[in-house]
Length: 182
View 1 (cartoon, rainbow, N blue to C red):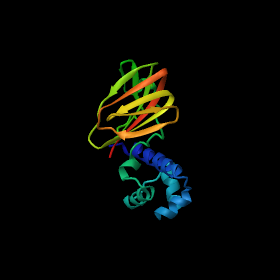
View 2 (tube, one colour; view 1 turned 90 degrees about the vertical axis):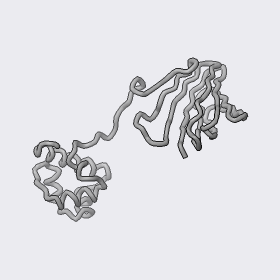
View 3 (cartoon, rainbow, N blue to C red; view 1 turned 180 degrees about the vertical axis):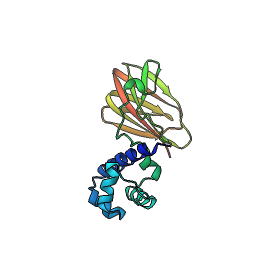
View 4 (cartoon, helix red, strand yellow; view 1 turned 30 degrees about the horizontal axis):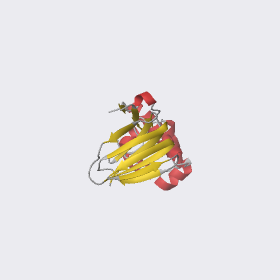
């Protein structure tokens, strides 16, 4: 639980940040929340001691819970360096996750293939759909007895819950896989 002085500073920064993220003026927030603009100005200045009713109306107008208004404001973004992202190597093929935060049912990877390399993909959960996009070079995908040859910009969609394999051409390749649980 933040100290009362810290909570006021958090409310001030959070209300301002959330309002600005929506592109709203204080007057727009006042109209949507039903809270007078001078009261909002006091909240954003950090010197106000708002009632619970004011806090509830502001939170509802901004579409957040009270806890988000009193917590330190969220950063608008975060840089993940390549070294921060989970990665693995299979048969010389480098595979790196592109979404560092867990999103249930979604997995996105960047795969860098050396020249003439290949590896067997791991079948995913039943009902999974996989999309493979080729960015650079050429990639051959085999799945369920079928074969697809992809060049730059090509995308193939296939059932990800079956055995499949990837192979790169003579110049190597870079591809992206999106695996969705459907």
